[in-house]
Amino acid sequence: MLIPLQSARPTLKAPLITSFLILINLVIFLYQFMHDRYEPYPISYVYGAIPYELTRLRDLPPKISYPVPITLITSLFLHGGILHLVGNMLYLYAFGSNVESAFGHLKFLIFYLLCGILASISYVILNFNSRVPLIGASGAIAGVMGAHFLLFPGARIKCLLLFFFVS
Image 1 (cartoon, one colour):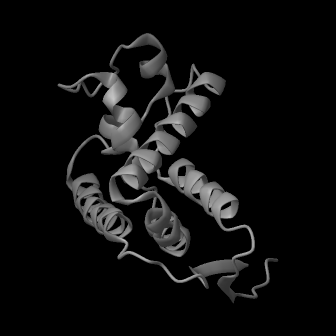
Image 2: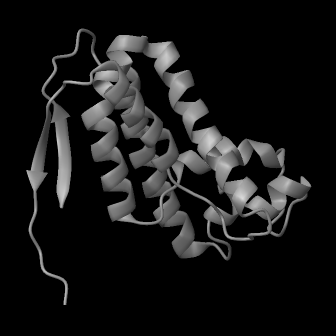
């Protein structure tokens, strides 16, 4: 398995938004972990993007006090487990710094959120009857990776190569 560690291309600006996104994802994951141990409903059913709710603009239990479409953003900061979180944050760290440096801080944040929202909408369109919450930043990070490959087509990526056997 290849795990990207960083782009070999140096950044021109400090990756403030990339660092902030990683930090906020870690904090929210800790909150999510503690919440799900003591509450009757997993937090993913409150803040995750549930296609059935989004296509009908109707909330399933547990009821929430904000508009259902906001879950297209809140779902980007929830993760299904530690490996899901670590994998997403490694990819964000490896590719986000260069893209943020090229776009600027605010444009990068807007781009990141739009990629995540559009990926979620694509999922909702294909799975409109699903009552399973969509969570994670994979769509946003895929957009960042795509931008990196378009902006820096010849950039080398330092990777960690792991070998393991599955039986």
